Image (tube, rainbow, N blue to C red; front, side, top):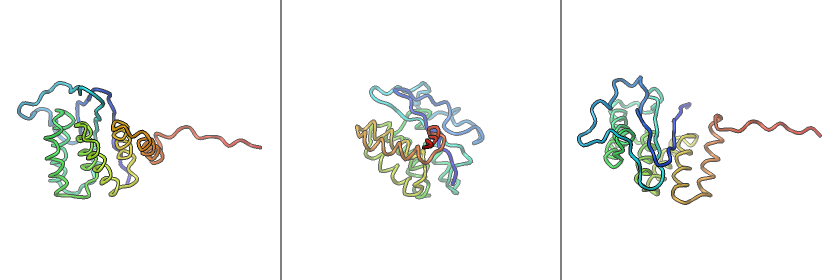
Length: 177
């Protein structure tokens, strides 16, 4: 399964103007939830992760799960209302337990709430579904790093690099002897 998760790490700043690609339909940002701030969210200490998924690469076949997922992304990425986004991700997962992107997005929301142990459990659920998901390995590495687990973070980062050729270094030319 070839799909790409676009992940950006913004130290102390989430810079997100959209959480889904334009071909998903009308922007959900035109109707923010009551009380939502439309400005940037700057966490007081530590980093936050912003994610985006191409709508044509979302793995669920359930339109209901996809709808809940997109609502969760909107609350999380556009409005920095992570706790409220969890209800939407949980609703999507109640419909489709094999919806790996929902596990990842839920993990990212938990990371942004500094609930690192729970975030890791969600990434691990996504990796049980798709162990070759470089994006899941990448966000897991970021969360492990922020949680103060550099050895585990390096291993997850190595795995992400292994799986996604775009992260690979230039090939080493063998030396002739």
